[in-house]
Image (cartoon, helix red, strand yellow):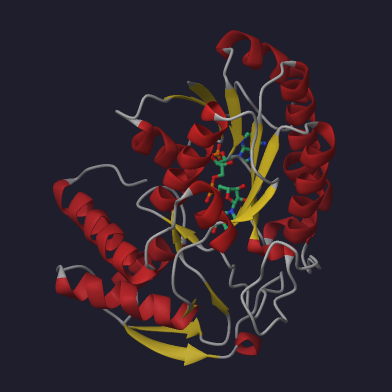
Length: 300
Ligand SMILES: NC(=O)c1ccc[n+]([C@@H]2O[C@H](COP(=O)([O-])OP(=O)(O)OC[C@H]3O[C@@H](n4cnc5c(N)ncnc54)[C@H](OP(=O)(O)O)[C@@H]3O)[C@@H](O)[C@H]2O)c1
């Protein structure tokens, strides 16, 4: 089975490539410049030359604050491009997996969100990703939309690397303590998507179109930062104190959901995969980042 994955340098794309190794799934990564989501006229030729059995759209404009200033670009990348990819995959009679986000919710629920909860995005990012979900759904019936949250890994840019890098230059970090979610290891997200892909290969279709898949356990950004730095200290990495602050003490362009926990039970029931506990996964990712920094390996 061959899967074309967009966003070749992103956390999820790189994790899919690593986790598919030795599992009978060939991952072909594509990204800028050959597959630029702002240039949909190139999609058909990439699809033709790769001839995949499935597409996973892991590329997105993920700059949440930046998008508040460039909504048209956000919609081009996060909504119009997935629509065109979905249209082309339908014409090629292959399935598409679109990855989406907890930011489709307003974060006002006291409970983890289930798939039947109504979205109410509060940011350009959330609105554009929701539009992408709806577009994929309408353009290709053979689709899966998987919402995830708070993704971290040893690759690319993410909260774990931001905290480790801040601790190299500052002794005290202020981190928001009143926003909650499920930190999700990119390798776990990749494993879940590969389980769904195998399911699709072995059956006529996906059981349902919309799923949540996030790490087990709830955290605030503050708790996550503390865990990162505790592990860092234990393995000889950078150290800093963490001070909890409220959301209104943190200046950002985009409003973050106060509670964006996702209930991933439907995914576990239908695909038999559950992501790991965030504390365990943070331990191994921080360990790997620090080991790579000591050995001079590339964790960019
Ligand atoms: N990161 C999170 O916390 C999070 C949370 C919820 C949902 N998600 C969703 O999960 C998916 C994977 O996220 P991730 O963490 O792997 O994101 P990421 O590390 O930010 O990677 C996104 C990738 O998209 C690519 N991209 C951006 N604009 C593009 C364009 N115009 N054409 C082609 N590629 C473009 C980037 O390319 P360059 O490398 O060239 O910039 C990058 O490789 C996305 O759909 C995201 O919305 C992520």
